[in-house]
Amino acid sequence: MALKLGLTLYGLGHRREAGKDVPRPARPTGQLAWLHAPEAAAARGLRELARRLWLEDGVPCLVTCPDPLPDQPGALVQPPPPDTPAEARAFLDHWRPDLCLFAEGELRPALVREAALRRLPLLMADARAPRLPRDRDGWFPGVIRGSLTPFRWIGALDEASARAFRRAGAPPSAVAVTGRLEEPSAVLSCNEAERAALAATFATRPVWFAAALPEAEEEAVFTAHRAALRQSHRLLLILLPERPDRAEAIAARAEAEDWAIARRAREEEPEAQTELFLVDNPDEIGLWYRLAPITFLGGSLSGTGAIRDPMEAAALGSAILHGPRAGVHGAAFGRLGAARAARAVASAQDLAEAMGDLLSPDRSARLAHAAWTVASDGAEATEALLSRIRGTLEGDG
Image (cartoon, rainbow, N blue to C red; front, top):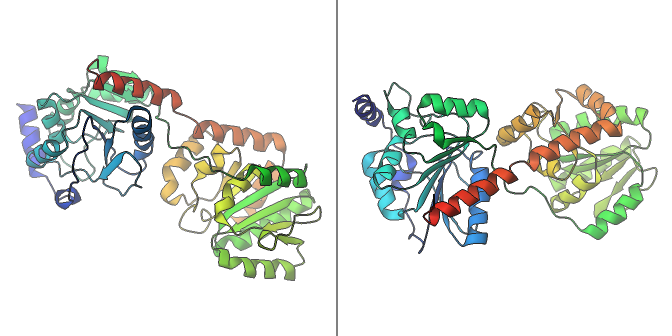
């Protein structure tokens, strides 16, 4: 009775959602896995899962998310349908998925109920805590408990998350602590011959990298580098502007202030006395992450947020310095912060002090290793989930 009342109230609280008017392409032939994420950050692990299912098993995926997601081979990306019984039926009639996988803990009761009536396998991964969609505020008795009951398996991030799902009504035998899913690789390529040649040129020099530096943060980086040079006179700054057209102005300033500068665009080599190596090709950023033990992420100090994904630097073993503004990379910075795998600064003075501290190789190495561990986390959880999905699709789950 409570569930019926809750579903009625939930339905009355429905607001129009974007998924109603989006055209649906034809369903692929054969098996189809449906993966749902409540937001783009939660979709990262699902996108890697979809990539593996397509490449290794030839199983295409439907990935639904309210936020825009990049296209990828083997995956159809759509917004989820409005969570009403009629829209849920139309959605499942069209796509006829063989398996439904939700992420994080968002429950869409109408879709879950319709999937359960059709005896579709329901799984959940990266499960943090059960909740309804963010636009469904209110009291809906029994809805979360009733929506959790049909799930065959729930992979919780940690024991606290597992307890939250059990308390909310998930079958205790269905809840397991699995950790986080692996995310798409952030490892950027580079020309290995170039890397080896530049590494030999740098030899034992301390090096740091300002990645995608906006004009508003140039002063802070120059100030920090000037201060750090007093501590380590052989220190080299590799600077990549956010916009390549800023290179001329930066070079003019550096020369006016008597910096020893080399410019990659002019094929100049960073010699022993070079203090600033100005680079302007963002396609080479993987090269600089590999060569610089320390990276400052531009845009995070006084911009709208870090311009580059911090996991790029983390995956290539560079210790990360960043300002207080995460921008679209908030989830990644949150994970790095929780693991003490990045160092936050609030000002040019903080940046200078942090640089001085990380010039100690053992300190930068500890930070870089912690970041690499975060960036490479999740492989075991993804393998276990892939095995479960394969068994379910084969009728064993």
